[in-house]
Image (tube, rainbow over all chains, first blue to last red; front, side, top):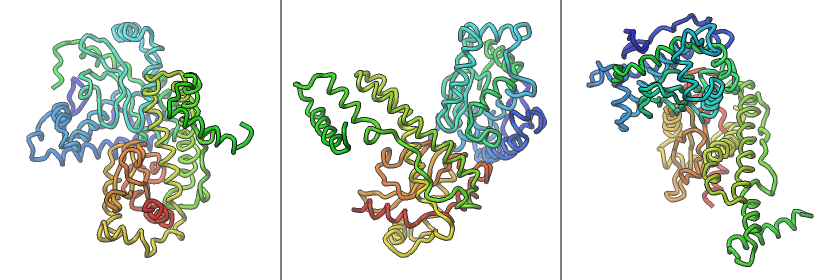
Length: 222
Length: 243
């Protein structure tokens, strides 16, 4: 069941990719999308379903499960799978064919304004984001995140962590840098994948929407 | 330094003087001595060790393509970046910049650990027809600790498969208990430095170790790797640890 507000799903469902498996070639190949979505993401969803079945978490939203299990260190499996399910749903929406580059100042005025206010310039944001993505040791994620005023920061997380649980911030863009996200297309050359992501794939419409929602102080991340 | 011999003498003298914090040694000399002694072996840099076999030696368990990228790209990057971190450490130590020294912890842990782990890994693999666990101290130690060799394989396999994200599975020797045990580590955290266990056998479960050959199916890779373990080397490590 898709949540129209956020594009993330509640538990139970593997959301379909917002595009065909060949749509992001050659930046991200068909085999990668098939495996990344159909195997990795699918497994997080099915494992989560199995873990919460019959528990008090079973009918909660994904965000609620994530926050509750983050605090409960005795059940890391629930957090790992819930957060990875959330992170991947979010990630697919961050990608689109013919995306990337610089957000359009007319279409996404607020986003451009906030990027400049927070980083000084778009190129400084790009540098920080790429650095975060390239220097996450091991498996992790790079994020552009916002507070409730639209102040933006680049964050990198490890494993399944995201800025909601570990930072109290609102994600507006992410890049998956677990090796499975790029290994078939780039082998060890993570920086080439990160460049392709930034230059050719970022779905700025989604990023701008996320920023609007973050600023709308009514949005409740529970 | 005119010869390796004189270098050893000078190193020892400097080390002794630095340790004694001799007040008659100028501060600058003490700092430079500490820097020189802290970094690469024999004043040189760390280097990528050759594999003990050809890149195709353990096919089809791990392909030549994977071994080539894993060794020449991934392990090589750890070596290169370790050397960079050590140069920065030299500079930080000799300028007395404690903040900078501490700031290098992540890079040293990651790249130093990566170099250690992969060096151990290559050595504990071999061609299938040379992989044999004969009767001897290793087999006995495993049976004592786990009941059977299959019992140990199952436990280590389960633990390695369950590693979240990037990491390693290890069979290690616990000098305090005198027994072998299984452990896992995240990212490139080296086993001995972070747990005290002596590494006997490692399984790399970073995705780059198996993604080309097995994609997401880590269990198939972990189950298959047992066919190409160099038990001779693992036993030698145990015997050395027990001395």
